[in-house]
Amino acid sequence: MDTAISDDTSPAHGAPPPTVSFAEAFRFWLKLGFISFGGPAGQIAIMHTELVERRRWISEKRFLHALNFCMLLPGPEAQQLATYIGWLMHRTRGGIVAGALFVLPSLFILIALSWIYMRFGNVPVVAGIFYGIKPAVTALVLHAAHRIGSRALKNGWMWGIAAAAFVAIFAFGAPFPAIVIAAGLIGHLGARWAPGVFALGGGHGSAKQSYGPALIDDDTPTPPHARFSRSHLARILAVGLGLWLLAMGALIATQGLQGTLAQMGWFFTKAALLTFGGAYAVLPYVYQGAVEHQQWLSATQMIDGLALGETTPGPLIMVVAFVGFVGGWLKQVLGPDALFLSGALAATVVTFFTFLPSFIFILAGGPAIEATHGKLRFTAPLSAITAAVVGVILNLALFFAYHVLWPQGFGGRFDAISAAIAIAAAVALFRFKVGVMPLLAACAAIGSMVTLLLALPMR
Image 1 (cartoon, rainbow, N blue to C red):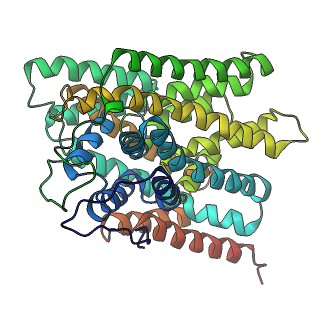
Image 2 (cartoon, helix red, strand yellow):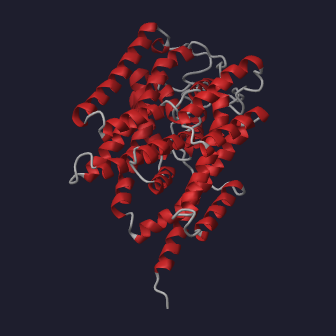
Image 3 (cartoon, one colour):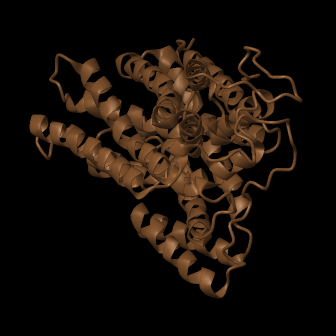
């Protein structure tokens, strides 16, 4: 599927592009929010095609420099990259608009789909769709572990960290934050005596191709608003912390410290600071907190939520909006007569607390990064964390497989049809490189047919 944005605003190759107005940029970020399928790799590829190759709003070198910074941060790197470029072009309001429009379409779509799920989830057609998608999600998580592992596990030490992380969470139930901290410390200490072992592998290389002069080119001076100053840093941090305190204070004042919404705000703030390695890496932490500890939703609903997240535009971490919606609905945070509003409010609260740190990271840290266009340093802890993430994601794949293949537990029946769908989906991903959307559509169709056939009366 061609996800390129169709309006033709490409400048002549040899001429520098004209200045981009805020309104024009707004329209682009809005369109991007609706077509940003394909996970972070696909989203970054779309932005590279549109902003570097076709529109030439930013040079490839500056684009990759910003991307390298975003990859070092917790949070969704594609959304942060959009925020960074929007901020570089149109100051703080440009960054906020670019980052927000990357998320809002997905939030609205997920609220609608979550309502359909909660209201009509037991309807045979809807149930059949999820029956087919859940085995595909299991294959997708396994494929994510392989994809990240092939990039991160470059030597025996990295394999050892991944194995240790898997054992820690699978056998001992170690909390995800402890695994992240331990891996980061290993990388920090290891960099001192074996820097080559912990070098960040598989990253984005230097620019190799010129697409013509860009609006923000390699040698374009850093604009005044993007220059580092302590007063700017303090102001951004104060505003960000103030917004967090204001939102959390409002939730505590209206529902109490132990209220569902306040607990969601606190939990997803922590989750936002632990999303090294992408959404698949933080899902085990979300599962531990949302399913096991808080019981905002069930394990089956968590898998269904990931399936919905895979089918919508925007960052995959937006699955947390589904978690919030279901939790708000089941906990009836606005009362039993306002279930949709309860879910929608909880989804919005969760999204706010999940993405607020990303805006702060970019708006506060961007000027420091713009001060140097060289390679970023101190990546060894991230390398070790990424290796640990591989083990954590593998555990997540086994968790999904257990709930999909033995829906009543190991003592119950083995679902051979789900197993066949999962195997077929894995072959499609690993062998034939089938895209996520075609794969989920095919599995949803198969699940619907199987469900309808099983519902037919026996003669």
